[in-house]
Image (cartoon, rainbow, N blue to C red; front, side, top):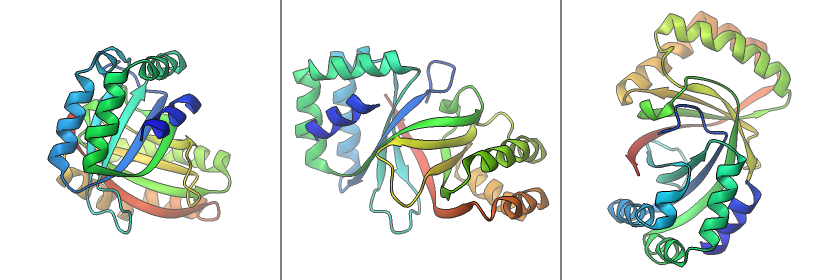
Length: 232
């Protein structure tokens, strides 16, 4: 785990009142979720955890199909300088490395790592959203998809009443899964609104028309639900 976090950092909620530009997702399979929370509390209590310019959140996966991960630890940075600072200081913090290596690793198996960056988004602060619907897709013509997505999504959000929520299009810049190239996220206040809004979206004529326009360049790979457990 020590080597993996360093290698990922070397290559690549929001208290900044702005969207982060680099978000690291550590997807984990946790047999004892309460111990993961405890380990994260310990990690964020170190001088390294207190000093990094990032939001630090723990999410649980809802129904997640055949994905092994049960939880996702996410560190989100506002810019490259904040990311670089976190990497450099982590390499110098034996305390932080010991917590990650010994306590967290003892209670969770790391499934995947990705460094993600947004292409386009709405909303200044996704920390206000507690549940996220994630749609992982293989997109063969990103420019076309982006054009149609940015044309449709604000209109649909206004129609359905979630203009204040966070939603957008992003891609894994490092650690990409071979099955998908991009993902859309949609933030919601709670589970019931996430489900009802998603159900209504799929049935809406505006979304149906959008789907027809991008059907030749988009393949849906996974649909996931992330539920915010704790912020640190």
